[in-house]
Length: 126
Image (tube, rainbow, N blue to C red):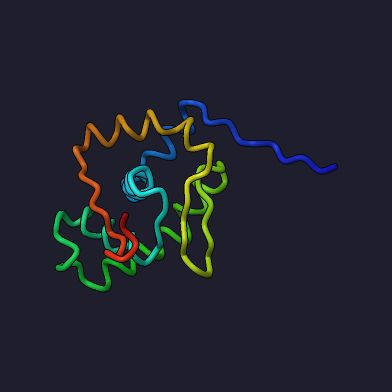
């Protein structure tokens, strides 16, 4: 039987995972909304990074976030079993392992005073 060793979320790892603003913004959103999609989140993350509304974010800024999420941040979080994502659909969900990271994410969120809007289409909101 094959077993996989789960990577440890020690303090250095937590700081490394949360040291990038795009990763934090992604986790802030997922904490509030349970799931997300790369296309939707890239727009919101670009808006947060540039301190502007989602309506004014240009396509180049959004595309840079997509590339960064897909090639860097999502694989890194998945390596530590914090998120699962489907590369084809772009869907992202938190795993149970996020519970270990959540208190730290919450502290960062409070320190940054970041409001997390619901970016889901109205038809998907409860």
